[in-house]
Amino acid sequence: MNIVIFGGSGFIGTALCKELIQHKHTVTSISRHGRPNTLTEEWANDVHWVHSDILNDTIWQSAVINADWVIDAIGILTEKPNKGITYERFIVEPVQRISTFLTAQVQPANFLFLSANAAPFPLKKYMSAKHKAEQVIHEQGFPYTIIYPSLIMDKQRPTSVIGGKTILCFKKLPIFKYFVREYDPITREQLAMEITNLVEGKRSFLTERR
Image (cartoon, rainbow, N blue to C red; front, side, top):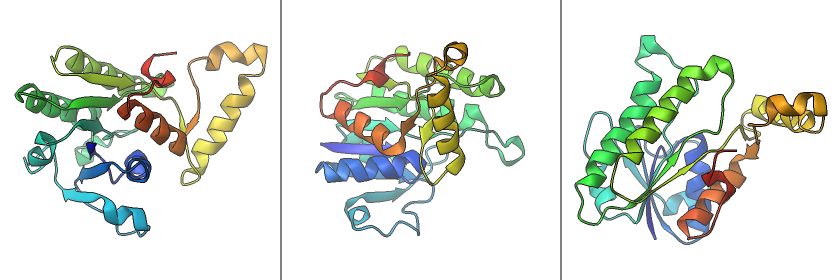
């Protein structure tokens, strides 16, 4: 299948590109930076790396027209308003732009949005933005899938591994289990496999909030 990934050069996007390429799909990554200079693995040569900023240009549209699936892996965890990096701009606006374009197509691609199952109170605005983006998608007429991962772990981000292992330990303790019930740590590779399963018509536990 022909799969377009917005944010394909990012933390989640690169793992997803790799998994989909290994499953023999045609993959196009759309991001502001194109192919990361540090990405030298052989599989990366099979990805079509498109340098495009969905918030400022329309270069990405030609790739979406021919796609079977469009995956939105754009996202930020923390805002930097002084640099113009906000939840509204990097979570909600891309969904609005993709949705508008897909709605105008006679045969729109399937759309997959990475939301979140839950987040701690300091990230309340982050979750509000995810919910707002979900609402935008629910109001559209094209086929879509929303997934709800929780903490994503990877050795590239040591704190995520520490946090994930801590949560898993707490889940075994009755006194703490209730407080971490909404958090299901998953590795970056596992997330990529779950998304690939969905693209290929299989089921995933991530399609429902837990």
